[in-house]
Image (cartoon, rainbow, N blue to C red; front, side, top):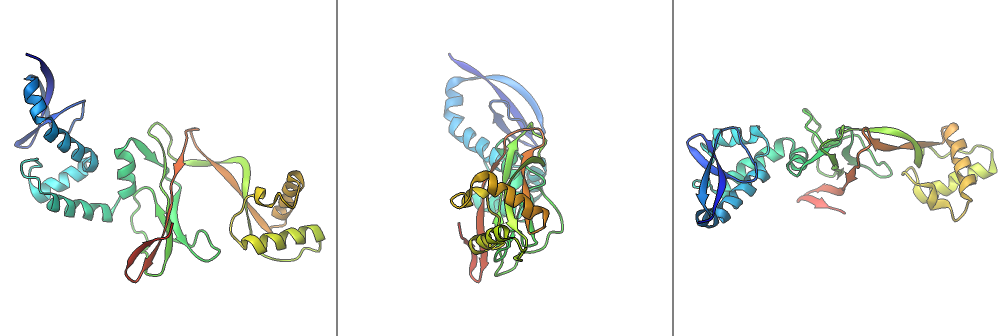
Length: 256
């Protein structure tokens, strides 16, 4: 008779099977179970395991559920009751961080989402990727970007400036008394106003070397600002996703 080695993990007065090394704060013992028993229980066990991975990756979440519902068990599991409590936790704190951690990633701590305004990319309010207390409340009519930045678990988890500058923005529209510089300022104003831009968008009108030289001079005169390319502090890769949203009269509207 085929058998498999299974871990039995006791949580309070309840017990659940733990496959592939998933552990909770509990006592743990190993025993041999006939394969037919495991196959019969496997769908239920895998469902509950997936549930644990999805919601209980933090001990605080587990403890909060037990304080509200008693011992966590598939026997007493009721979707609506669990969902209500977990939704309250997600709305209150750390929703982005928990999702990233659950799937084996780390969030970039010094980058965040933010509110938007006309021709203003960062309009004052931040939506961080890690938990921060006492943040301002978003109000109806405000537009904002939610931007998770993720890296690997072994990374430092924050970004630093590099020596490469490929993004610029016009600080103000003013004449400098130099025909070539004034022409470029007007071109940027007509196309981008004060929004960020990359030089390659203007290469149809300039040779690259000349354009970069003019932008450098405009930066020295404080007419444009340059933005350094950001890199993860330990050199690890970073991925970013963004949704732009608005708080309308009838709720949240996704604009992207």
